[in-house]
Image (cartoon, rainbow over all chains, first blue to last red; front, side):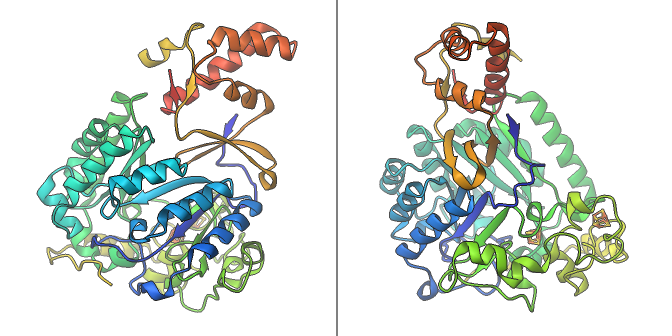
Length: 362
Length: 95
Ligand code: SF4
Ligand code: SF4
C-alpha cells in the first residue's frame, strides 16, 4: 500500500465543489475571488448531481463540498446524497455557521464521510473579530462537538497569520479537546482577499521560524493522538509550493456558476478561457479546455524553471502568484529564490501595517 | 509508540468512520479513502481492510488470509501489522 503522491495517474483525484460564494463570515484571508458570484448564478441540484457522476467516471475519488459557506445552500443534504450516490468520498468544508444540528444529522444519514471546521483563533474574542462575526467561535465549538457525537471524523482547520501565529499550540490543544483526529495549520496564502489584506496579515520572519519549531514539537509530542498537517508560508520559503500538485494534473475546481478551474484562484489570471459544466462534460473540460492546457506539463516554462532539476517537483510554483507579483503568469513563481524577481517578495513580506481588516463581503 | 502496542493478536480492528474502500473503474480498482488522503491498495490490503469489522481478531484475520491464499502465516502477519499500524498512526482505525 502506498500513499498517493508521486503516483502519476493523469486522472484527477479530487474535486473542489464551490457550491456557493455566500457566507455569513468575512474572513480577511478568504481564498475566494474578489468578485463573488451572486446566488442567481449558482448551479442547481440536478446539475451538481450530474457533475458528480461525470467526476466519478473521470476518476475523481473525493469531493470537497465547500464555498463560501456550503450551509448557505438549502439543498446541501440532496447535494451530499448525490455525491455519495455517485460513489464519491464526501468531505464537508464549513465555517459551522449556518449548519444546524438537524442538518448535520441529515448529512450524517446521507453518508457524509468527513467534516472540516475552520477555527479562527483559540481565544473567543479574537476569533470572532477575525471572522467578522459575533458568536462564530461558540457556534463552531458546538457544531464540532456534534460532529464527534455523531461519530464522524473531524478536522479542524486554522488559517495562521499575524493575529494568531503565537497561539498555534493552543489551537492544536483546542482541536484535541474538541475530539478532532486531524488539524491543519495552514499559513495564509496570499491571493484573493488575503492579497488585499496582506500587510495586515503578514507575520514576521521570526514568528514564522518560531511557528515551524512549535509545529515540529507538537508533532513529536502528539504522534498517534492527532495528525498535524501544515501548509507553509511561502513568502519566507526558498522554494515555492507545488501548485495544486501540478496544473491540471490531480484536481479540479467547479465554481458556483459552473466554470471549471484548474485552481480556486485561476480566474485572477487574465486571458484564460474557462469552460462551464453547463456546456461541456467534465471529461471534455479536463482534456480539452484551454485553461487546463495552458500550464500543463513543462513546455510553457521559461528560465530558470525550464532547465531546473526541480521543475517536475514544484512545477515552477504557483501560476496565480507569478501573475500577481510579476504580471506574467508563465514566469517563475517569485517566492523561489532563483527567480529574478525574488527581491520583490522580500520587500512585500517586510511591508506591514495595522490597518483594519478589509473583510470579505459580497 | 505506546498507542501501537495495543495492536496484538487479540485486537479486533475496526475501520474508523471516514475510512472507506471505494471501487473506481477509471483509477483501476479499489482505493482506500480517508480525510484528505488516498491510498492505492494492493489486493492483499483490500482483503485485510475488508476484514476490519470490529468482530474478527487479528489472529483470526491472519489465519483466514493464510488459508485463503495458502501463504505463510508470518508473512501475512507482517503485512497485517504494518498496514494496521499505518492506519492507527493516522487515527484511521478504532481498536
Ligand atoms: S496557481 Fe496553483 S498554487 Fe497558485 S493559487 Fe492556483 S492552485 Fe494555488
Ligand atoms: S527555478 Fe522554477 S522549477 Fe526551479 S526551484 Fe525555482 S520555481 Fe522550481
